[in-house]
Each structure stands twice: as C-alpha cells, then as structure tokens.
Amino acid sequence: MAVCVAVIAKENYPLYIRSIPTENELKFHYMVHTSLDVVDEKISAMGKALVDQRELYLGLLYPTEDYKVYGYVTNSKVKFVMVVDSSNTALRDNEIRSMFRKLHNSYTDVMCNPFYNPGDRIQSRAFDSMVTSMMIQVC
Amino acid sequence: MADEALFLLLHNEMVSGVYKSAEQGEVENGRCITKLENMGFRVGQGLIERFTKDTARFKDELDIMKFICKDFWTTVFKKQIDNLRTNHQGIYVLQDNKFRLLTQMSAGKQYLEHASKYLAFTCGLIRGGLSNLGIKSIVTAEVSSMPAYPDTGLHPKTPRSQPELKPRVRCSTNCATQVLR
Image (cartoon, rainbow over all chains, first blue to last red):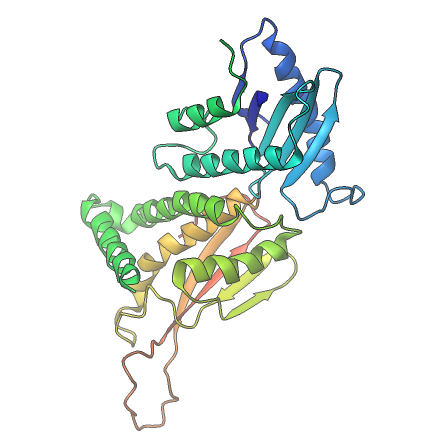
C-alpha cells in the first residue's frame, strides 16, 4: 500500500500527486522532487548498467528510515514515483511492479481520452479511484 | 477485415468534411491541411502511449524510427514500411509502396494534386508519435506517381489492386516544431 503516488511529466513538473492526508504533506512532495534526480541518473545511458537499460521499472530509488521510494519511467519519459511505508515489510517487488503496471494502464487510458490535453493536470475520476485503491486506507 | 474499410471511409469523409466546413478564403490558405495534421498529432500521441506500454525502452533515435517503421506502421496500416533511409544527421525518409489510405484512388495523374490532403493526417500521426517519444520533428510527405510498367507505347492492363501512388514520408528531426504543409 502506497503512502504517496506521483505522476511527473517529461518536463519534470507534476501531473498528479497525491499522498495520504498527514500533517506534513510537504515532506512527501519534497521526497518526490529529490527522487527525480535519482530517476534521471538511472535512465541516462552514461551510468553503469545497474538497471537493465531496456526496462521500464526502475526499482528502489532510495530508502529513508521511514519510507522507501520506487520509480518507473514510460517510453514517453513520464515518470511514476511511489513512496511506501518502510514498516510494511510484506510488500514484495512483484507487488510494486503490478502497482506500477496498473498506474501505467490508467495513465494510457487518460492519454487516449480526447478531452484530455497532454500536459494538463490529471483530473480523471477513474484515475483517482484507481490510485485510492492503491493507497493506505486512512479512516 | 471490416475495420480497415471503416477507417478508410471515415478518413475520406474527414478530409472532405474539413474542406466543406472551411470558409471561402481558407481553402487556399491551407488551414484545412493544418487542421487535419493537428488531428493526426493528437491521435498519434495517444496511439504511441498505448503501443509502447509494453515495449522496452528505446536506445536512440534510430531505434525509435525502426519502431515506427515496423510495429507502429503494422498496427495502424497492417504492413511495414518498405524502405527506410537516413543520412544519420536527422533526416529519415520512409517509403511505403502501397499506402493503404491511397490505394483506392485511381492511378494516374488526375488526382495527384489532391493526394496531399489525404496524407496530412498520417503526417500528423507520425509527428505526434515522435513528439510523445521526445523527438521534435517536421514531417512532410510527397507522392510520386510511378507507372507499374515502363511506357513502351503499349499499355498492358494493370490489375486494379496495383496502386501507382508511392508516397514518401520525410522526417527531419533537427528542427523546431513548425507545421509545414
């Protein structure tokens, strides 16, 4: 279950960012922002081939003491960043991959919507509900 | 398959619809071609997003052009591009010997000048796809009518399914986006 989900456009501005309502949402925004550097490092061809150059899933970007940050980049250079709780040890790599897959499918649907202009903030309700299903349920 | 004919007919109607709804002066200005090209642009963006969902990341520009020639063209037009040439400095020439959207038009020179209207949407399609993959480009298309057999004075019967229009698409990728006719 994710704590924060963000969709970043190719020009590095957020198309969609949503976190669970805690008192300090700015912290998540900042984490997503700093993770963009790590994403750029991973997708640049110059770096060592730590990540398979052809894969879309980037894996764990960096861990902090409370949270772990995962990344995924599409072929159109749109980045998905997901922050999960470190204490939630049950989450395996496969589950993170499947969450990113669902995100990518929903993003593709948003892109094909003729009423959506590429580059605008994502306001689709279907996308919203899909992200809600992935986030931690906070009562 | 029926869906091929559907898009073909819709595309033809689209072209004539855009021209009919244009004002008097606009037909000469070429705004209709721009409209068609922009339509293709938006469709191309969405299509590329869908098609590249499961493919691996592209290594470089040539990789992207090969994807366009093979997978993209096959999914949209059910065949591959016949010839891809490049000068390795940003100009790519894609040649399709049997362009699906033009095969139903009669061979010969009579309708050659109108062929560009029917290519605008496809040019936009390619430009939109490339722009979504991160490449700014200008796409132009030209049609050179080539007879099926050389003219020897005799005129052998050319079978109906043999199209004579050979459109060639030229993409140059080292310029800013500017819609050309």
